Length: 347
Image 1 (cartoon, rainbow, N blue to C red):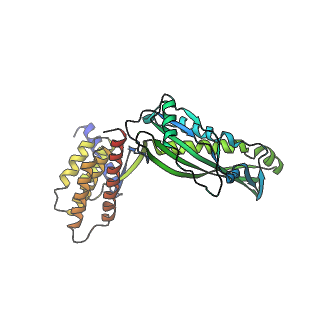
Image 2: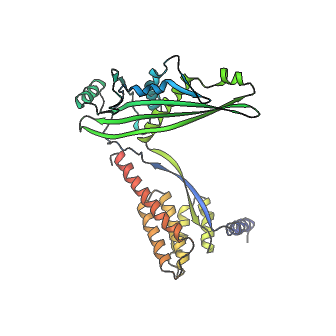
Image 3: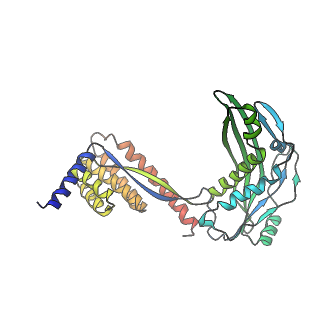
C-alpha cells in the first residue's frame, strides 16, 4: 500500500471509529420561508397610509409608569409614531418586494367615540382615489397605533431600571381592483430595555430611556414586524440523519462532510434493498433528508414514506420510528411552504 493510500485509509478508519460513537449526525442548510401573508405576484407598487383614527382611550399613549406611579408627557411625542412606523416598514422591505419608493399618505385626523371602538373599513372609493394619486396597486393601512411603557426600579448592588414597552397596531391591506382585504390583524408585541447605575439620581435623570426614544423604537419596530409578514426570508434548517447500524452509513457521513452528496446517496440507496428493515428504514430516512436539502421535496416525501413502510414491516418498531413519522409532517409543511413560494413568485 502506498504512503498516500495508507494515510487516506488511516484517516477513514479514524473517522469511522469516531462516527460510530453516535447514532446520528446533523446537516445544516438554508431554505426560503414563505411569508405569512402571500400577496398576488402581479402587484408591482404599494403605498403606506396612516389612517389617523383617534379614540379618546388612545390618550394612553401619553401616559407611562415609573416605579408604580403614573405620569403624563408634558410634550405630545405621539404625532410622529405613524411616520416612524412607516420608516420601519420602508427600510426593512424584502429584496423580493423591492420598490423604487413607497408613498406615505396621512389622512385627515378622524376622532371616533370609544363606545364605538371599531375601525370600520375605508370606503372603496377612497381607497381607489389614493391608489390613483400614488399610482399604487394596493394600500397598506395603519388603522391605529398605541404604545405604553412601564419603568420598574430595582435596588441591589446597583440601581436598575427595567423598561417594558408594549405596542399594538391594527393593519389592513386593501386591493381596490378586486375590492378585497388581503389581511386584517392586530399586531401586538413588546420591547424590553434595562440600564443601571450606582447613583439613583443619575439613573433617573440621565439614563432613564426618554419617552421620545421609546415611542420611536416601538413604532419603528411595529412597521418592521409587519413588513416581515409579507416578505419571504431565508432560514437556517438543521436535520439529523443516521450514521450508525452499518459501515456504509458511517462511510456516507465522510462523503457528506466532503459535500460529495451523490456518493452518499448511492450508498444509502444500496441499503434500501437490504432485508434488514431497520437498516433500510434508516437509509430511506437519510435519502429523504438529502433530497429536502437539495430542494426536491417530492422525492423527499416519497423516501420518508418508504422509511415508514420499512419500519412498519418490523415485528417491533424501532426507537426512531416516532422521529421518522414526525419528519413526514415536517416535509408536508415544507411542501405547503413551497406552494406558497410558487404563488408568491407567480409560478
